[in-house]
Amino acid sequence: TLGLNHSSVSEFILVGFSTFPPHLLPIFFLLFLLMYLFTLLGNLLIMATVWSERSLHTPMYLFLCALSISEILYTLAITPRLLADLLSTHRTIAFAACASQMFFSFTFGFTHSFLLTVMGYDRYVAICHPLRYNVLMSPRGCACLVAWSWAGGSVIGLVVATAIFHLTFCGPNEIHHFLCHVPPLLKLACGTDVPIVALGVGLVCITNLLGCFLLILLSYTLIVAAILKIPSAEGRHKAFSTCASHLIVVIVHYGFASIIYLKPKGLHSQESNTLMAITYTVLTPFLSPIIFSLRNKELKTAMKKTFLSKLYPSNI
Image 1: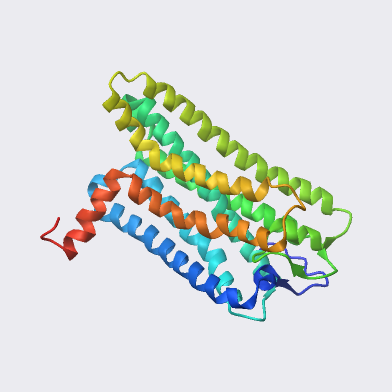
Image 2: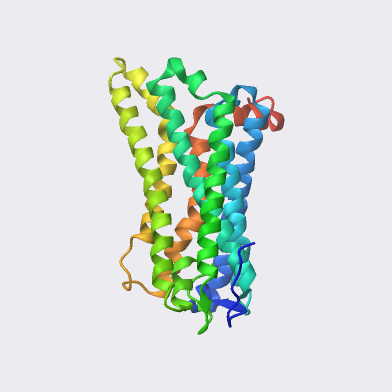
């Protein structure tokens, strides 16, 4: 349990999209619903392809499957509630439901970051230490890396949700967001320990995100150095192509995250803040399976072989 402190607030109101003109809400609903369904379909397709194609039973695709699972669960924690609120005039969320949403969104969000870091390490070993790859990335070692990623995400989700919902909420209960997020909830909390909790939660999140980013950056610095030593242009291109999809997803993931968390405070309206948050919570998971499917030649070929050949056997 999260040890929830119900204080004097039993539910919150998610302001989020209520500031937008009403005629735009059905358009947003249809757009986000299509993106959500495509995110689910794309990730399930990747998982089914890897499962059915034996040539893809390698560490890189094991990590990709784990990443797809974390994306499905991350969007499941956020998007269905968002879609329901777009069509509802009663946008309240219970105290316990708000705490649960925060726990799951942080758990799966940080698991996603840890898995991207593990995938960067996998590419580093494959390119910089190919002869030791089978030893360093053994099935047991890969399973441990995935397990630690999930454990790490769960610990951070539990720490953040517990810290926030142990605070006292005694005033207005309007969350200026479409989900239970830390900054708008801290504005509703009261008591002398709010600044300490805000600092602690901020340090936990920034330290882990920055640590993941720096490890990925280090991996790619070493990868680029190794690729530049390859004598043939074809060899360099082949080596880099194995990293391209992961690198693009990392850039998109951290690019949109930096827009959300590093933007100057007080310079944006409620509407622009909401739309910027959509880029990270809806758009990034939507783009990820597209990037991996289109940029990864092995995965694209396996998808054609596994699925399209059953639909159009004469064309494959």
